[in-house]
Structure formats: C-alpha cells, structure tokens
Length: 145
Image 1 (cartoon, helix red, strand yellow):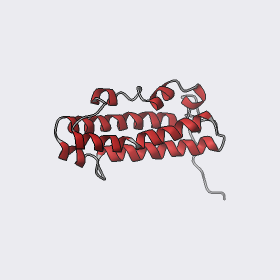
Image 2 (tube, helix red, strand yellow):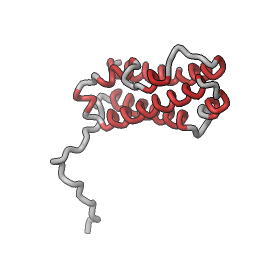
Image 3 (cartoon, one colour):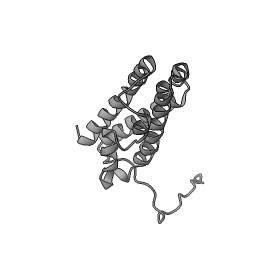
Image 4 (cartoon, one colour):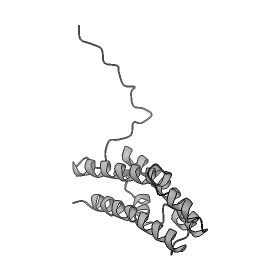
C-alpha cells in the first residue's frame, strides 16, 4: 500500500469521526475545537499532507475536486460547531441530518477520496491528467459509412 493510499484512508476515517465530535459538542455545548480552527482546512493532518502533495498528485483531476470538497466539508463542520457552541443545539442537530450541507459535503468528500484511492490503487499515479491549454479539442465521433 502506498503512502498516498494510507493518507487517503486516514483522511476518510478522520473526517468520518467529525460527526461524533459535533454530536458531542451539541450535547455538551462545548468542544476542544473552535469554529475558526475547524474552518481552516489546511490545519488537519490530511490538509497538511494535501497542501504539500507532490506534482504527480496535483496533476490529478481528483486533487482539484478533493481540495474543493475538503474546504466545503470544513466550512460545513465549522458552521455546525458554531451553532452547538452558541447554544443552538436543535439547529446544530438539524444541520447534521440527511440532506444538510454538512452531510452532503461529508458524503461527496468521502466519495471523491474513495475514487482517488481506487485510481491510485490501480497504479495510475495520481489519476487522469488535467487537460492543458495546449491540448487539442476532442473530435466528435462520426459513424462509419
């Protein structure tokens, strides 16, 4: 198993654990974390690894998607935590329910991480390259006569 796949596995587990942390914050009205710290997606272990990723990973379509989804996840988690810490527990609980921004961000992030992991596992070193400005336009397929 490559280090990249280990990092992605760890990220999936760590981001899944946030729901339990947020529920605990709702129940207690407190947390060891603050919303502004949670919002900063570059402070978690995965974010630090992600920001320092080597060029072969940065050239992956998954890299861009994961980056955007990771930021959305942290923003949504920070919003839920802010509600919990400000005594708005019922609103925070609603923000953790199916269809919420938090759940949507979490599911999309984990799905994209799993797609990236599968691609890395196939030995494709970071996924499909991004098209460059100099790439030719795709040609339309025409039926054979």
